Image (cartoon, rainbow, N blue to C red; front, top):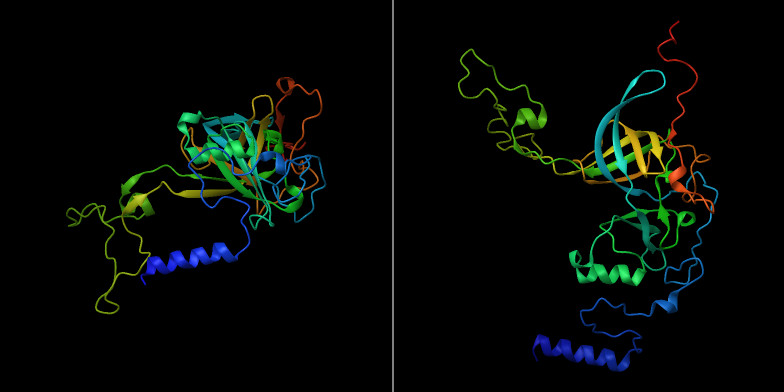
Length: 314
């Protein structure tokens, strides 16, 4: 008996002796969900495993982990604070962040929230992607990102994550894809000094020089800094200071540079090392009061203190 026949016989025995499977074993290529969404609709937002997730403010514990957000890098500029100090600024735009999926330990093995940002037409998405959004009952999104959270930081599907999720003055970690530089030499890629400009150096001014030893070990060690592809890699800039937020336009001003070119997506989350004060953060996120008009809100600036840093020496 061939291997294919043995596999077919084993499958038939499993179907005849095992318990009946409530779901079809074969599904045609369609954007319709396998299960009726009404079976798992729960008050406050369900996860499909019987867990009820409610959208209500809570108290953040020291070991709690909130979700992050997806932002678009708008570019860089400079601002002057109230003391006259120049601050290099990167402007980030949180474009319609929404919780698109809730993952739990019982079903996926992890507590996490999938966040969607932006908008996209159906014709620009694949059928599995369209089916995912329809199954969750959320609008079509341009970018998705999963953020691990603790159980007390879960949010129901459809919850909006605005720029008020973060507080001016706190530190965040920003992750993005760096600008691609193509194939570069050792001087640009690693900062090598290069070879002499004169004194007999011929056609080797930007060379990296020797790459190994002699007969022992007789090879070039792995990881040697050499010319090669530069950039276009995921990079995380830690401890980025949030200078100002604008709730009316969903903009965030952070100090310094973040990875990526203008128009690229970056992922923002609470800093790991310079942890913010948990008493100041909205947990699990900021919920707008009833009847609040977002367009009337003023920008919020970080507290710079009452001592002029330029007069402190006096």
